[in-house]
Length: 382
Image (cartoon, rainbow, N blue to C red):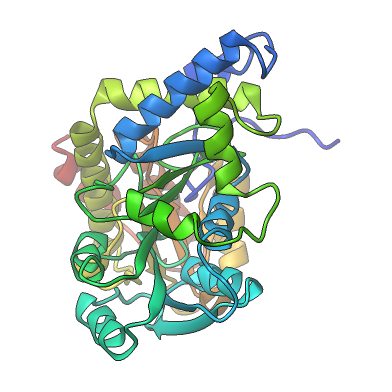
């Protein structure tokens, strides 16, 4: 196996940096998943997860990536021929569409150009035209584009209809403001490896009473992802139905401790500050941002390459010479944009270091970028 350079600064939109405290939690001795010790751990993790979701609904911890709980949300609510409205303005909104198609749902796409935010009034119009829509899906924070969709306002629309409201908060929960109950979210899904700052491989899902009414009358199309199996096992024995990733649950539990100690409000404010500093730095360099201003994410910033700058060369210099890793574009914007993740454990020094490296990499490629670090410092009050 080739030696991995562990000294690089990871500034991609997930997986993100993990604190040594959380990493060390994975070194705890493995315990049996049918023991009282594990039941106590799982129950404690669920209760902490409820506080981060801000919900009185049911919450389950799933061994699997964020895509697993996206799949679970659809597999347990959609029957063949059911109408599913999917809001698509990036790669992960499209993923919800693909999952719904796998389960034979009749998908109605509300599409926007990548970089544009979803409009609640458009959602209302489609629901008026299709009152039999069973499920509405939206991605809160599209890491593929750096767009933040207005899930609170969309929730205010959907609550007046029979449709379930399913929201992907995989790259926003624990970094941006999410209040599952106040936003009228029926099923909310998230992953461990982004704003929660835990290692990848585990996810969580919250279920409202309205959602349970639908789930109880829908035959699950999955064995492993049958949410009723998780409910029944947890209610009867405080366990998961199948072998969980014990070490990852240790890590998630510790990561949730760190989030709750910092406080959700303080954590959101920190993410807002880092986002503003990143934006100020890039704009001062003359870099055009990709996401429209009103819909910009506070956990990831996307920007267009200046003319003549090649994605591979630019990110290669950052990684190999300056030891900073950022992300490129996906899908239709591959090679056209770059993305900086500033979520989870990211702090001021990481933003300043990343912007400094970006300035130097651009200069090496013939683009005269300057002033970004100083602009970011001004925003940060440094």
